[in-house]
Amino acid sequence: MDNIKTQFRKKNLLCYTLPSVVGMCGMFLYIVVDGIFVGRGVGVDALGAVNLALPFTLFMGALCSLMTSGGITITAIRLGRGDERGANDAFCHAALLAFLIAVIMMTAGLGFPYQVAALMGANSTFLDMVADYIFYYSAFSLPMSLGVILQGFVRNDGSPGLAGTSVLLGALMNVFLDWLFIFPLQMGIKGAAVATGLGQISVVLILLTHFIRRKGTLRFGRISFSLPLIGKIIKRGLPEMLAQFSTPVTTLCMNYVLIRMLGDLSASAFSVMSYMMSFLMGVFLGVSEGLQPLIGQSYGKKSAGDLRFYFRSGVAINLLASLTIYVFLLVCGEYVYPLFNSNPYLLKTVAAALPKFGWAFLPVALNLMIGSYLYSTKRTAQAIVLMFCRCIAFNSVLILFLPRLLGSEMIWYTAGFAELSSFLIGVVLLKHSERNGVVFRS
Image (tube, rainbow, N blue to C red; front, side):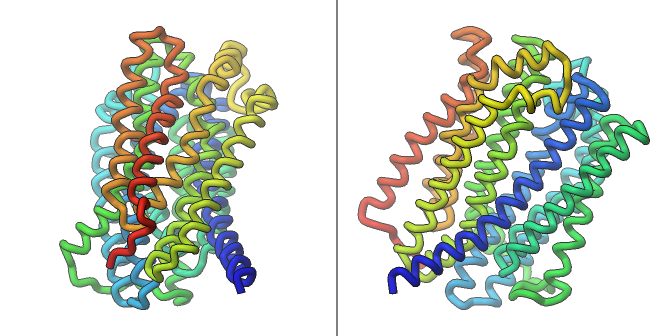
């Protein structure tokens, strides 16, 4: 009997995490492909400009993840209890909130692109290019937001394969359009932004077939606007939003310090490293989001054994992925760096900095899984503390001030120190909250 149950858990693990990982890696592929085509087709400065615009684009994604993760957590627990009507109500509220976020971000990006670019740390070298990228990217805010939220709910509603396939096909379209707009049509950095937006439109159209064909339980429909439910969605999704804030906050602070202490070329080098390591974030977020419905449903069913299995499996997968990719880049990185640009000074800077910076993703692998496990099991306060420390407090303080105290080269180590400090706090929070076992709240 135990063997049958274990096989069932493994099947669920594979069915949910694999499409989620493929989907998230596909989403990060948008960023990587933009970097490759911009670096090769426009130049080194343009490569840095896309990275300077990255906090704005990821900030929008983090806000959408607030609604997605909060809605999915509530939906999964309600489905675990057999409350299909309540689950659908949470879905509709989350979709409406994502739409409102898209409108706000579109207004900011289209109306104030230069002001936003300046906030991202762009100096005179990068300002025009960053503003162009933000302007054209913002024009597609609605499909960007809908793409994020529909992926999560379609995966949670019994179609994880469709969610992963949609992002993969969207990424392939983005590759083709990046080539078309940057090389034959010579649209420059704006072409990369438009290509990303059109790729997201295709993702949304594919995901909508799940609802048109009535494949699952969730449906679009009228809702009775509920402020308490909105508050619950925001509360449940806040840890995931803070988790995804880590990348834009780290990128923003790193760019600010690098440009001022090591020069423009260091920002472009950081851009190359960020692109290469982004696949790791795709794996980490894919595993945590893929396991989220399984953990939520297990919690709703009050199955402590299932919870332990899925959590430990997620930790093992994330750690193995982080070690594998980090070692691969250390050994074979010299063959990967030139994909972005062949500037010898850029490549030399990347080769020297990657070993100092890349190890940060080892504790990231653990932090994301601990945070996801905590908020998926209604330990929202502990999850918020962990994510606030790793995404805002430690990252910003260490990145902005440690290089001033210990020298400019220390900048490459700061992200790792911040993540390691957060991991220690996460372990304490996890052990303390389970000192008497998992507490199942109604």
